Image (cartoon, rainbow, N blue to C red; front, side, top):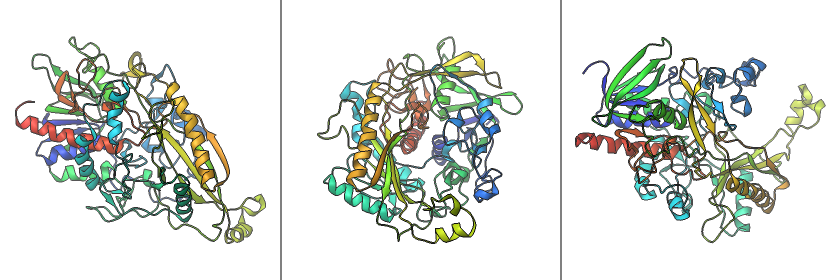
Length: 559
């Protein structure tokens, strides 16, 4: 086999790309995984993982130079000294905003699997049915039952801690022993669930943190520094989990600094033949050939690749025949909720830094509840105890030490809502061919916004948060709306949606591009709707399922 010839090409090395590489290699295929950024090796690449705050020049905060270099990232919490190297420099990777869009990107091996929030929830049966039931966008070509065994499959390998609750709205999974709620959370749970007579639930947040040794990974050490990279392998990432598995097969080639500029298309065979790659360091161009291509570059970059793969047959890009490529951009809208104080626990504290919070599953627009908007939301948050030092003169030296040794009643409880965003055709990305990046490639242009449905939902997201905390005896409750712009959720989805008809969708129910059936898109781009739960677990399941289908079809000679 020539040096540039493989059975499969995987574009991207984040959550979806890592899973694609693992599954395809374990099924016997020779695979090359192409990553546009640098390599970060497990353990030794996590340069800040063991540092204390005082070991950073600016105690982990942001500087004026960082604000200058990262005009987008500065809009929210990701811009800080501890993980700066994991985010791509905005000044080198521009994009166009017709309407404001906050695009936070990580260009390196592992992608945002190194920095993700690790919250891992299954979609429920209603999530896959809602579009058809409500006449929104197009129907999902799959249902919960199609994905359920694949959820189980990826959960067992990734390692998800959580509690079984028996809730239809939030299906149980294959869980490791759950992390514990702290004393205040247990009390708030008891009060809240009693008040709402079991119609609302407060549970431990399900996360991809292992609580037992798992494969070659050590269980979570309760450091809560996950996004710096975990030397123990305590959370799921490409580096800790899928990449070692793929490498162990001896069938994976990893090529960093490889910007895939287009998918090569044979119009006679109606198939992709491979990809064109621009070396990010040398600016030289290479071609790699393969029988199948998995596009897992993250939702928006995957669509960029498809768009930039224009031919005389597909002038708007590969997968553009339906007119839906680049449309239906979604995110989760959040940054609103409520918080207050909890009395009566001055003699209690917590041990360790638990890397997850609490979760309150969706309760709106299910069963008999009907609102003046579609879909719903859930809450993340938790309780914590502050230092309890409010006198400025006591915040230094011996006085501080003495004050900290005195029990404090300074327990707080806060929740933030995450709401579903509908897939609107007019929310779109396009190629801006007049604006180029440092490699001379066209950039994406964003024209995306939330609409009335989301704005109505946000009223409930705020009011319900306040009402629930007050019902649970939380004091001094304040409702907040910190303002939201699309992209801030870092859950970008849509743009190359799955569907049942090539006239209205980019992908079929197997994640194959209708216009080139040996091209699979399995990251956030494929999503037909968004649910209100974190989507990464669904990307894992969809990718594992698509890889299984791809290999079976390949064996049958259909690809």
